[in-house]
Image (cartoon, rainbow, N blue to C red; front, side):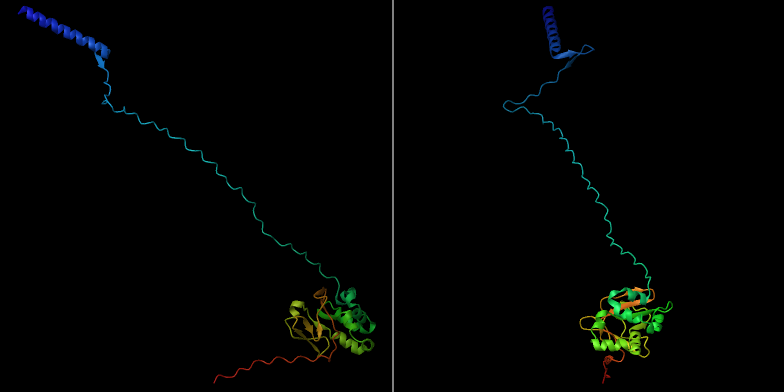
Length: 249
């Protein structure tokens, strides 16, 4: 009995010693002398590949955005301003002086400056009254036959009446001339008639306004015409009849 107990005791001691030896091989002692077990490796059944860790995906760097190209500001558009015409200088000569200074009216100016027509010139030189002259140019006088022209120039009263027949009271620039049909002249009871022909030419009786137009003077306007106006020789056009309206039945 004693021998059996001794064997059991020895066997128990051996087992304890063997357990302590294994603990020393598979674990590391910790501060309190107790071995910490090492985690067991993962056992994969034979024939199957070992699982591989999923590759770590390193996020690629976002591409650096291209610098935004701001359009360079276009130059500020400047409104196109048409060049301003210089303001014409105010006239310094009156009607008779202006006609005398224009070569195309030399024949007319020569008649006005004759001593016998001083009263006509005095009227045209007025500083308180304004006039418009429809002035026949040199070609207008040359259109008259030499005999008829000499007869006119040598007949003082007839020529005086003719000169007055070319003058109307007031300012009549070209833009206003076309708006009227009839206007009185300085020759009493003798009017002139304004019209426009099929070619769009402005007519004064049977003369055409041509050449110099809107010549401004200190006391009026001058418009050139191509025919000498003679009082009593032009037949005034008959006014167009108004369309008749018949009463509704």
